[in-house]
Length: 245
Image (tube, rainbow, N blue to C red; front, side, top):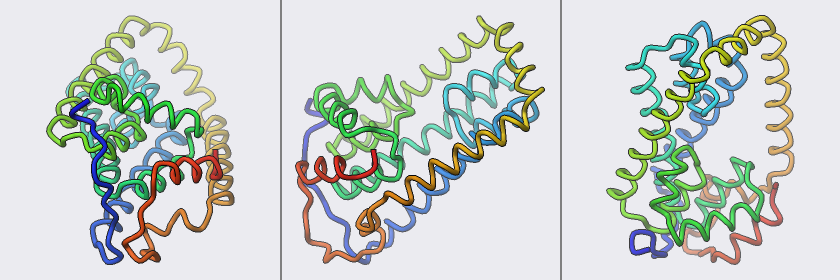
């Protein structure tokens, strides 16, 4: 597509001051997502607004509706949270090329190399459509940035995708409100057991990622390179295959 064409692969300068800021923002959003996922059983009924501000995953949006969230808060907070993550990943992919993509993929650790390559091909063929259909995918947003989608096109596609997601989740939650309310009652009854279980799962996942992450995964942040090296797509795929799955 003309809007998602492979272009120059700019490399960050060792003293690029924007990159630590962007990575710090990325870390804040990841931390917020983890806190939201861990505390969801207690927050969903007490403060659904705070829950979706921390993490606007589909399940959190879905349960926030029968929990009684205000429609305006649901729309504004959900849109802002999903937009922030989308634009941050787009900027990292757009401005820092293969190394930015490699760093993002290793931090997320959620996609297998095969899935990642499938997404690369899908973005090449229909990047705009993929953003509309998957506005909450960090990898998709980073990939379309890496493939040099125009910022205005990305903003429009992301906005359409987020609005569509918020609408269909709200409608689905209203249709199945009785069933979701029963589940909410069960969650509230066992909320602290669930918090403990989610905390353990998050800790184990973080420990596994940290123990398996190669040291060179943080070279981009540390500026240990000379700022002139390039990473080809073949290099990126090889690193992904050797890195954590």
